[in-house]
Image 1 (cartoon, helix red, strand yellow):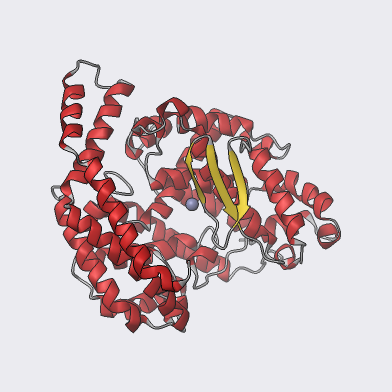
Image 2 (image 1 turned 180 degrees about the vertical axis):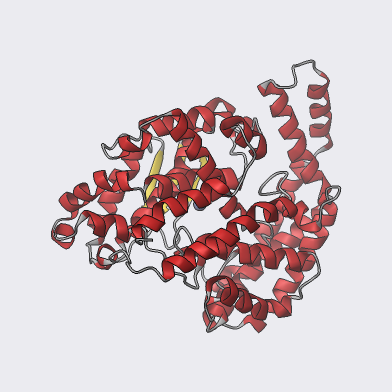
Length: 469
Ligand SMILES: [Zn+2]
């Protein structure tokens, strides 16, 4: 959209938000839910879960006044645009008044939604992305992870050997890259009769239901593993969407549970599968065959090592699998403090830079690559960031269980056999829709509550040998 279209577009968005909100909160829906609740059914039946989740959506929507929904939509639409310009110019002062208003509106939103007993304002906002998740619970899994992760990253930084970067430096024709990543998405089980894969500036997974799932990815002449990794990531999201039951479209049991569970699916295919040794035993010769000369001289170690380089950097979306979680923890701590009233918006850049030094050992040179890098806060999405690391945590715990239940699972990757994993995910996770909450699903599938250990054990187990420590 040309920038001149912004103002009227933001009014259109505000109107649509209000109209949708009016329908969602119609009294007649409340009556129908009450009627459904009055019917007898066993508490753990799918129907009971359906009614429970429809009730939850209705309650959340009715707690927000229409004016607030409209005001929020309008402000976030304008703010995203202001943020994009401010980021380009590395000008935090230009974005600051908008962010201050967004924080104020977010606090009003949290108060309308209702702060859970014993909880805090941030919890009410996070609940819209990760139902039931509390800041205190997030902190309880993040802090042990942070301690061991910081030690690991430091040890990798001081390691005597580093994987070769030759794979990432190879220059490869973009059409050849596109054809290859498509093959991989298909090999993982993405159904191209019920989905597409296209190109965009930022990779994403969209679409409207399980039989129309649209993925995008992006390419550069070098950094082929970036294109491959983002394709595998979005394919993981897409496989979850395609695995939701079609006869439940439009109902909670046809929807994903939470952003954290969604992310657990994308990360599993991107990391646990796509950065594993056995995957590369299968993929490296295939890539050499498909791409030809630019990859012909590379060894297996160049591929596998190149896919697993750990290097602290400023930009979250370019971060490797290990340092990524520290980027998230910084954002979580900052937004918790902002929403809790312990940190002023004006002080964000200073705090941000202090934490990057402390957590990642980096001196942030300008806000463009610092606190202005992400779109989330400009959309008013507070409480969103932790879902990325929660996704990594759920993922590692689910994957451990899958490996326990299916001995030889990862050996199959070396033969291009991915169907057993997909079938397991379909049965244990995808097919349930929102029948269970994220916490319930985790306990049901893995037999224990979410913990930091599977993720950190997985990272240490893979990365220490690669770096010779
Ligand atoms: Zn994702």
